[in-house]
Image (cartoon, rainbow, N blue to C red; front, side, top):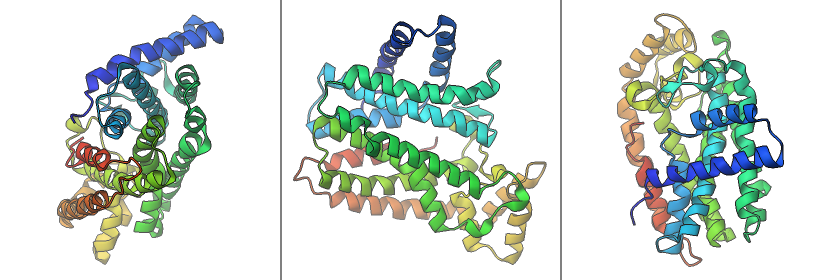
Length: 351
């Protein structure tokens, strides 16, 4: 069963944007000038990505149903997918400000667009608010409407996401002299990753599709969560690896983990493998902004052969995930193919 094409998914967005516009202007009396600003933010921040999270809702539904979706089913699952992309857009706007990033998806970050600046802080929750407008318009008569909007499947996961982002920022303070390397360990890293990435990027798309299709039994949700958190961890390790080793032109952004002093997978691996002299290099250069600091850390990563370490990690982690998929109990309607396709989207990615 071929994955849902991105172009078909993107064709749904103008309809959803019109729905948001209609409700904002007609129901809530939003001035046209304010809507035009909101629309500019929607377009800049939501479009242009790979949309893996959104597409995964459609693909999961198709695997669960064991057939192609009807036009109505496709529209509804695509709408759910775009709601996740709106959540992602909200977090990226804020993440770029906190990281002082310069580019996102090959374009200037939203807060760096002329005339935007710190208005972006207000634009972020506007993006999230669009989710609730779309849910009410398109799903209020769906049997799973209450579940779509309950604490476990949106607000709670959003809370985990924000808490994970907070943990990430606290472990990597702006003052390089106070980087707490004692907190750079596997336990801290795993907790940040689970909260910041795994639940909303991996668990949420599949859970929404399971709810929409009527397969969200406790057993199915438990199995899905276990596999998808492991997959989300693998994805974030990939992200940390690409932040340093990928070509920025291919990645679509300039990596900032080193200068931001992030508790990244590469930093954790460095601390596990370095000798006293190498640790001193890390402590004197990591999280510092200025000429030469980042280059010294990159050279240290090369000296420790972290690219090879990553390749070994990837092989082992993917084998572990595939074993978990093989053990899935399909008796209540869950399909192994849901997870094999999800894994195929991120395996050996370069951006």
